Length: 356
Image (cartoon, rainbow, N blue to C red; front, side, top):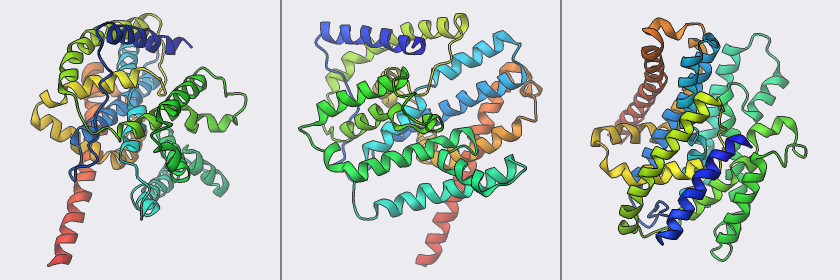
């Protein structure tokens, strides 16, 4: 419960301010009526992908230097700061979700097949005693590499939407469904369903992220962006970001709380904050973030291989703890990004050759 307390405090402050100043909550706008994809969602995914790497780097440093409390607390702070990442991935995956022809064909080609291929390679590399039953268990539960749990989790949401799309897209029920999803998500976070669900299922339980999925579907229906609301909330959320950073420093350096991925409030706060400021980012930076977000699946599947092999190398050899941290971050984002670029370039050249 203690790791939810930070979000409850933050939500209370934001709710009070929005109510006092009569400011509606400025959720992002999908503009699904346009033919052009909204780049800002890919940029959000780019931030989230970098955040996922930061979470894993904390474990990497903890593996080699658990007694170096100052460094571990610092990497814990960056890990906690990045805990919005997985919920944002779930949310942005739901925004453009539509039940249409080729629904599962697209999921098979762009998600399932790459996941199976990388899981086979990962299992052969990481484990010594190969067992077919164990491999299928790891595949279904996303346990070949720890981060792989995200794929079975996402597939469950895709299946849920495919079966109940008429429920999720019904405008009459959207407010009630969102409230129910929030209460379910929060209840799951504090362990209400732990004794009911199988223990092995806890890591990929959709109840941990159901609120973000339903909210993503809701955002996918938003068409009009109120620029006045965005301008007014920009400064409010900037102030609260400073407050939150202070609270996060206290939690990370004094209490040493390791926040969970399925925090119910913090990801929404960070999404709104980023959304308000994305247009002010340097164009080259946003282009890089957009590419990382757009190719996040390949980066997500390749990064665990890199961090796995790096566990045989002390991060301090890269120039000490500070340089070692940034070098590790660059390697784990840069190498998969470069691989994704080569793959996309190869696809483009192949298609161009076929047309000629």
